[in-house]
Length: 203
Image 1 (tube, helix red, strand yellow):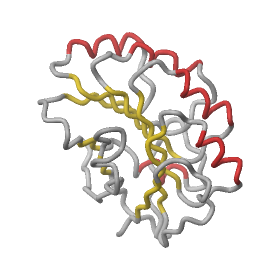
Image 2 (cartoon, rainbow, N blue to C red):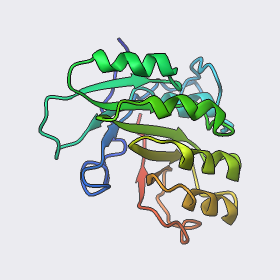
Image 3 (cartoon, one colour):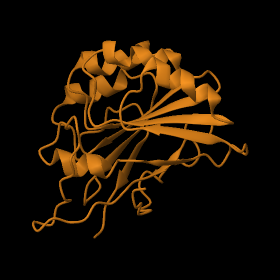
Image 4 (cartoon, rainbow, N blue to C red):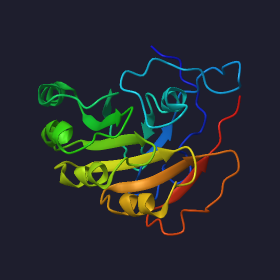
């Protein structure tokens, strides 16, 4: 089991208030490198950031807590898009409530996401995505997923240009954008049509 540090990541606004009981997500805190940045793990698919591996490491194995849900529920977690067979096998899990995907990067189009249509109907599908969508097609692909989808996008700074915010606004199932930065600022996010939160990681 990986050691988790409850760093209060994603806590702002995700415990309650988003989509009738949105998740509160805590993230794993990696050790610091000699340069003071998170150490580089071996993320298999990479990420769109310059310090991509270290940033994605902070999003691994998020803990989802929905305080409005009083069921004794089970959460299934993946760090990739599961196959249709794997999702079908989840029907054998008792009291399945959440399927959580913490992806290392944005899929380029809908093709890799097609298995998600097989997500069990009684579970919601919570997806944590790192960084801004690499293209409009990558953003719009999520609109074709036929599941109880809830998206959380975690970025490492302000948007590089206004078109990126426009791409985020096309995501029908986007619940929140969380910005990881030392000095929280809404600059660049004025046209974002979804809730915005900030987080700061401490050594």
